[in-house]
Each structure stands twice: as C-alpha cells, then as structure tokens.
Amino acid sequence: MHRFFFYVIPIILFGTSYAVSEERKELSSHLLSTGYMSSSTIQDQSQNEQSDYLHSSLYFQFNTSGLYPSLTDWKNQLHMPDGTHPSGTNIVFGAEAGCVINSSIQVAMGYEFFFTTKVSTIETSGDQINSTFFYGSLRGSLPLESVQNLTLFGSIDVGSLSATEVMENYYGQNFNKTGSVTAYRFMAGSQYYMTENWSIMAGAGYFSGKINNVTVDGQTWPNFSLNLSGLVLRFAVNYHIPL
Image 1 (cartoon, helix red, strand yellow):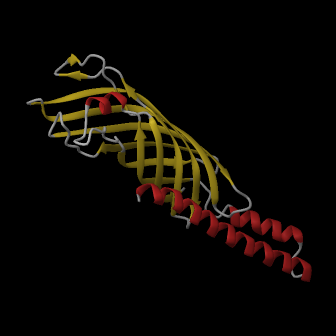
Image 2 (tube, rainbow, N blue to C red):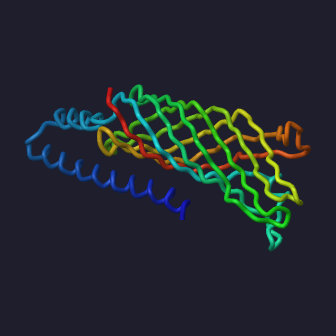
Image 3 (tube, rainbow, N blue to C red):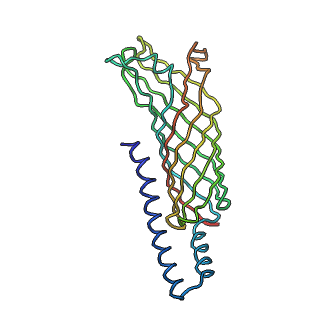
C-alpha cells in the first residue's frame, strides 16, 4: 500500500495539471480566432500565469519515504521461522527547511529518521535497525511551460548517516551494533505549486550509505556491514513563505 501511493499520486497530479493546461489552450485559441485577444497578449498572460507561484521563498517540508536497502550481512545473519530472511525495508519520516532562490535553484538542510520493522527470528527475540540522516541538499528545477506551476527537479543530498542495530536476546545476550558514514542521495521527480504557500512533490532515487565499520562496545564486529544503500521513493508537502 505504501508503494502504491508513491506511484499513483504523481500520475494523478500530472494528469489533472495536463487537463487544466489543455482547457486553457483551447480557450486561448478561441479568443485568438475571434479577435478578442492578440497572440502577444495571450503569450504574455501565459508567461505571467506560469510564474505566479514560482518565485523566491523560504519553505518548510515534511516528507515520508520508502527505502529498500541491500542490508545483505544483516539479512544473512537472521532467519525467520520459515527459513527465509527478513526484508529490511525502511520507513522514513523527515523534515526539511530551505530557500527557493529562484525557479531553478533550491538549497536546504534536513533531518530524517528511518527504521526497519522489528522482527523475531530463530537467533533473536527482537531485532531492529534505527537510523538517522542529517544532510544538506542542492536541487535544480526546470519549470514546464506546458503545465502551469509544475516543475521537474534533480537533487543531491549529502550528510551524516548513523545506524544502530538493536539486538534482543541474541543467543542469550542483549547488545547494539552501531556505526556511521557519510551518505549520499540522488533524486529526480516533480513539484507542483497548488497555491502561493503550498506545494507537493514526489520523486524516486538512490540512497548510498554503506557502514563498513560496525562496532559493539567500541570493538569492531568482524566481517559485517550495515549497507543501507538502495532505491528510495519519496513524497513531501511544502509550506512556502514568499520573499
């Protein structure tokens, strides 16, 4: 269900925007053919409408994502009662604050918390990975002239990833495996300005964050990594304060 919304919401958004755009094109053509408006007037009006909400602003964002990481070593050490390995899918919640410099460039800082579902396995009564990602973001946008207030974007996020594997009753012991690394995320998607103050965005990308140095009480856990690299699907809501 979580993955379903990430695919369906952008399709509905784009379809609705496209339909509105087509209606405006038909109206402009009619006015031009009847002589009520000149082509230059229609073009100027279209440009003004396109830029209604695409101006400088401060923004605050709340987002949720699905992360589908590798976690090969983590999966291989655990076995479900039926003999399979846990999936390792992460649910992500985050917040971001930044500045829309113009219709092409945005910069921001953000914080995210994500986690795997807690699982009970043959080896442990409970195992879960909790992670945090504190990052800076640079986003480039391209407004679409054919669809009012819709932009396509590409972004890169760079920051500090920290992860903790909480193991309960692992062969009779409780302990945590921890580690950190510099992580990267590359995203592409679309952003739609519903009003001057509100916009929504959806995107997909790749998260790169493999923690090779995993420790327990300061001692390195040999031949083990927490590889959180994988596909990410994201949806966000933004509140803008125009500048």
